[in-house]
Amino acid sequence: MKKKVMDLNSIKKVNRSVLLNILRDHGAMSRKDIAAISGLSPGAITIIATEMLNEGILKEAGLEERNGKAGRKKILLKIEKTHKFILGINIEKDTTTIAISDLNLTILSSKELATNANVMPENFLNEIIDNIKDLLWKLDISKGNILGIGVGIVGKVDPNTGKSMEAYGIWNKEVDLGGFLSKSLKLPVVVDNNVRSLAMAEINCSKRKNIDDFVFIKHGPGIGAAIVINKKLIYGSENQAGEIGHIIVNSDGPQCSCGQKGCLEAVISTRRMKKTVQMAFDKSTTPILHRLCNGDKGKINTSLIFSAYENGDPYIKKIIDDNIKYMATGIINLMKTLDPQRIIFFGELFKYESLMKELINQIEQMLCKESIKNKIVTSCLEYKCKAIGPLALALERLFYETGAIYK
Image (cartoon, rainbow, N blue to C red):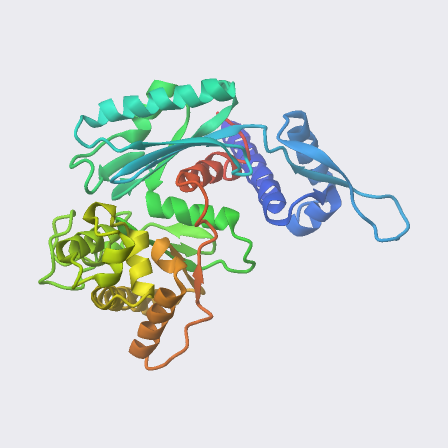
């Protein structure tokens, strides 16, 4: 008897999840149209929808436009975006971003603070918790109205336990992020690698249709990738699938924060690029960058480095072109191994047309002139909050996958 009840509860969860995913993918729809897409009977959809309307998860969104057709207009349903709110925490080497959003991933408030790797992890997490409480207080949102917390962090993560196994450049030990935050805030917490979290946001926010398989590549202070097949993240046996940043591209290269030598991240990250340029910064060696910085080495940042590249600074051009060759090599290896529908790029480097053109050119040269332009796109997330990934992670794991059934 108990098994039967569990089976019925599982079916209910799946059916509610199907309904929610249809409304996410298609927008406001009538019960009849939802039934047609889902394969469930109109009667079953009516029962599920009524239950979720009563719970405040769904709301009626007016009548369907009929374009002059006769007959009764259908009542549309949509997800009530303020039914719950979400907390997102994105922890990277230099900065940590905290944000609160609604169920449409619209940011209501956010705050950025320096990632403090010089204190015990628990002390820094308590600082994050204090900032979360402050944001909730300012928005007048109670914890009872919070769906849960999504956490994205660099390095190795076990999403099943919520533990950061090794956050390169931040902590050199295992940290139970999920357990600590859940116990302190009395909220459900989901944790994943920051790049996989961003890939989840790409799935939620992208308007591209029929793109179910892709590799998401992030370039910044670190380099990372996430593999998505059939709109699902691929993890691998050790939760390291897609770790493009730690493939070795130059065995004689600089040591990486992971301990290896010559990792792609150690060779071409913006952190490495900035360090290399600062060492060579001179009016004669980097004339255009020198002018853009008004001769002040302290003003060097990635935006000015990329601008100097576009304006033809010879030294900067050599450094970045060399980096692009390494990047192209890593991308080709992923393409040949996985054959994805798309490669989606995220990061400041990919905003510059000349840089993208050179990257595509390098890839095509290595592929013997095979055209890959239809496979390369930039992310839809570039101008969104840094915590958009963790927010999307929590939304997926705690709302869409559960059918909005809260324990």
